Image (tube, rainbow, N blue to C red; front, side, top):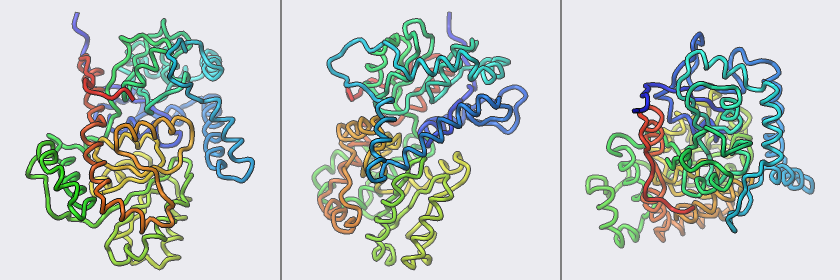
Length: 450
């Protein structure tokens, strides 16, 4: 019997950092609105109208603790210890030797204890008034749906290149939760956790459609200009001219970019590492002043980070460069921030950030300079970027004006652009829509183990 087809689905996420919300933003075209709700698109499970106070308290406690500890990591003496305790609780066990990892962790048991005491029940009851496919980017909200008897299909979108036991249900072999894995390693990991293979789809991470375009025209145009800026001496282009033309097409092989060398530095949702952005600004300020380099400082949805960057720009007397060679990307609404960020990426040549969910944006042909990790899952993202060939360890940001231009002269960053474009998945959003709406088993066939 053919599977029922749909036009829309409920998209459920959580407001914790940026990773879980950024993951579902590209699915905005298929969002369904629950019966009786108004003004809603993507549902934020920890902050929606009518959420019970008891549920809100549970969510708020966890989010505040995570953000506070993330910012405390760099405190002398105690910072690393406190963060280490949290990181240990959420740790990802070594993959080898392959073994049965299905026994639930303490974290999973605690989550299920709260769910079975009613956490998340109100949300599922609301959505059960008109059950449609349910897609969520957080494990707890997937457990909500199953435990509280959601009547539609349940899909959980994994947001890192490797995942902890917390993502798998208490009794994985009995679960009906389906998983979207961004790479092969996550599928293998879920199988070690006891999730049935038939319930796992390797789709890749969903990247924004507006950065890809019809027949990849937007993406290829961006990459053509990017390679031009990242290979000023033409070393990579000369050596790999056939490869570039074969995979981009002759019309996108340009000889001059329409924008100056552009670097985008993005902080995480907790506002950690904002100081690195200021160090980059100080190092490059002379080039910025001459409009030879454009720097985008991404404050996200945090007003405190926006003010921090604004003060730094004023201190260096670069206000005249606003809207030109320097931009601060900010919007208090996260979905609006994602839209602004995606627009900026079209003319970004280098993305500089910790190896968060933004690691997957290597699939847009973006070479990624990696700031220090915050959390063990980011260490795995770092390894994945190295395996793809699209990531570089940052050198001292104070000397960006020196080492970055050595890298440019070598053609390394241009090579990383093509490596990411060719080897990192970019069509996750289309695979997910095919599976959820059309009932097709749509997956990546050519993939890395990591």
